[in-house]
Image (cartoon, rainbow, N blue to C red; front, top):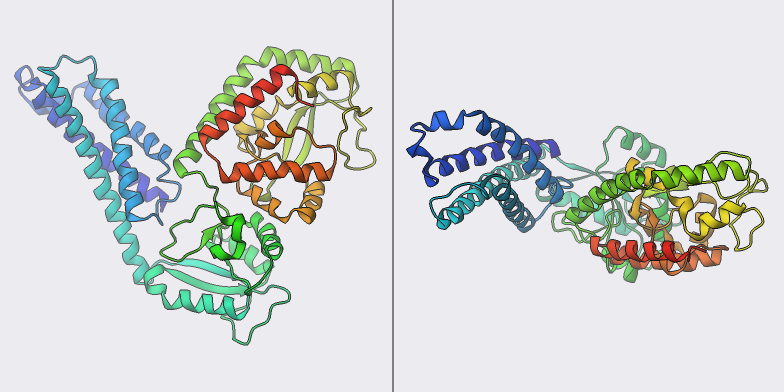
Length: 465
């Protein structure tokens, strides 16, 4: 579906820019020196612009977050995103193409900008509206549907499924089955019982669009968070009623899923636009950091190699976004056999830390290879601290809400690392994770920037321990 919107935006951008060139031809009095619009539009410069400009426009539309979830937006969201994206495209095109042009008068520049914005907004919005209307038409006629699995088979879960099915002509839900929850019973007959293995098979075949957790009234938050922990790795959007998690979901963004009051537990509070901007900043900053810091990293590599036996780069499996494991990269700061007796957190005067390792940890220089993790997409510059599964299970026993940190990619730095620093025991890890939950409720590019500034200050002042 996303590709249809991209193709439509590309086509409408070509049309809009063609219409703009038509206005440009007459408003700038180009017709006085080039008698035919056909000759004007076929000039090599105009042909290059006609090809390149619409492609760059797509970059702006992507940054706006429209393609993250093109279908499922409210009409107002669609209108406002198109409105502001057209405005941004108008501004950069004006400064790229028209700022140095000789114009008959300053009013012509206003007319050109207005005609460009009008052409971009109207053509793009009409194209998107046509696709959205077609999609809704297909949903209402059961040509399309959202395959949904209900987690739970209690009376409440079955009633939820029945309600969604009754409204299927309007909403497009298609409940394909229930997954039972231990300890729950029902006097009603569920549509179809599925096992976790069947869910995995259906998911591998891309046959599941969403999971809805529907538990009995009065169920504990721990029970719900345990279910969330179990189903995060599927990568399927997980939704739940707002009342089910009380204060823990008070800041989680409510997605528009066709008037049903469900909260998407797999989506962070940041807007789609900010998420895309965050990813672009992650990549650009990390690439720049690896280039600028390469001499320092080479020196660190030599120092680590000469100071003790073992590899320069240390790899360790951590749990990341939606509980996907990945290998985090670090400059080795401990002896090779540091964990021969099993996982063990480092203390302040830990004898396992090498002489060079003490210096690296104090200034957080051992974290520098993680810029490569960011470029790969395993991590972000800012996000909750990634932990090992061994410790995650212990943290969740004491703080079940820790499960929520897997909504986002883990970070090289975090609010917890800035405010708390390294943890030496599980209780301290639990305390530190509270800062990560605060971050989740207040995520924004501006907050990331503040955390990065605090991190830089920590590194410069050597407060890494």
